Length: 93
Image (cartoon, rainbow, N blue to C red):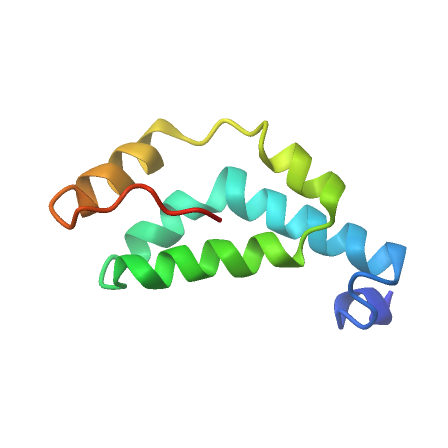
């Protein structure tokens, strides 16, 4: 268990990867909206980088599952409103 929590062997240890996948999926599905509101001062680029880093830590199976998540409407509304005047919106993960 200590190995999993310490992220030793991420991408090579199935237990470590499963725990990381679960944490990333929970963040994306349930916590990202609150995180965004809590860190509203972050520039758009920082949010994009956080999502990219989260994505890179996930296994291909978790990435496929993440693509099926329905994000909270409040998060999508906040994201769009926050950067509507910055010309953003086409960022690729």
